[in-house]
Image 1 (tube, rainbow, N blue to C red):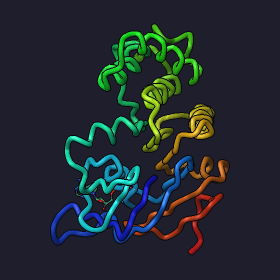
Image 2 (cartoon, rainbow, N blue to C red):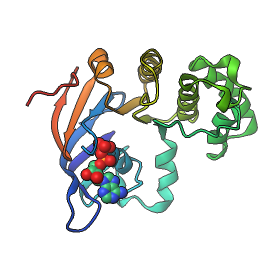
Image 3 (tube, rainbow, N blue to C red):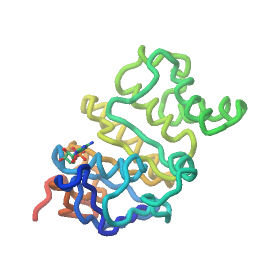
Image 4 (spheres, helix red, strand yellow):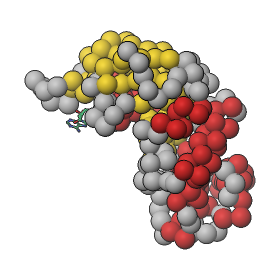
Length: 229
Ligand code: ADP
């Protein structure tokens, strides 16, 4: 589902590698943490996966296609199949929870009927069935991220990418959000999470890819945060 072959990324000619010669394979249905200190290259990797940027060298295959060579008209298909979750939520704060999820469906061409049926369903999946009409700005941080999760799964993507999804949340709420991501994964969606959160990584015992200065220095099943060389 995600395959990196000698994947390298440099933002500027003659500059440092943000990612250098990465090789890994992620299967459909996996749950994977990307860990590494700030500047290690986690965000760069996520941006490459959604083809926000193009690799300098090597290949990155997503859903079997080399995204570096993906023609522009295939980009909507790629992005529709990837649900994004952000540290800062990136919601329309003045709009309701319902509207935020509905909008994500509307832009992919879903019908009003589908939207009316699906939005309450996904809000229910994240435990927000009674908050559909609440404006996002009136919700707690944890509830906002639940809306973020509902939006991410609304179009039934094959994969969810979460970039520090709990970076702005307290420990209890963090656990709730991570448990929801685990539930989404158990229903068959591939989940990739970039995080600094040591407790969560150690607790979940999922596959961990360790980045350090742009290099992949570890890849462990049931990993813990502290990688030993
Ligand atoms: P992380 O997400 O792990 O904190 P990043 O992927 O943001 O790491 O950064 C990896 C490296 O790439 C860092 O050295 C960073 O300074 C550099 N970098 C990231 N984005 C850009 C950019 N737009 N232009 C130039 N350098 C960048």
